[in-house]
Image (cartoon, rainbow, N blue to C red; front, side):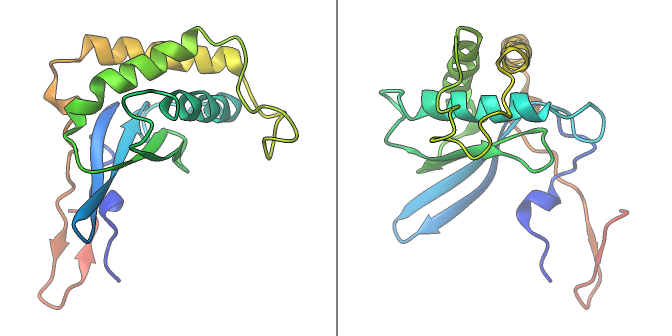
Length: 174
């Protein structure tokens, strides 16, 4: 079975940042999945579940209301490993082009007074939110982005080198 693209990223070397995960062509159009990574996998504690849920609501709402980007947004949601989010946009842009958007989105969380859609009618688990921790993670990530704006590592995936035999078997310890 072919290894999916997100598993070809070296998760021991990835740092927080904004990365292109994959680009899918749909006829003449394309859709791009971005990895918005807040934590270093396997080295830092993951994001608190309640805070992750709140960040999902807050930033999805921000993105879908941003006048310059709302028509491009397809999806914003958490990674299963709780180290970041996936953002799916129409078209294909370099990760650096999303820097300003992500910085504004995470800074906007700091000013939130409530989590949008955190009611039984609007949310599948409305009690699982933590606005104060979401603000803390948002500030941490926004500060990190600002401090590393000129660091190429926050925009370029570290790829894992995989040994593949002549008959197509993958070795994952290479």
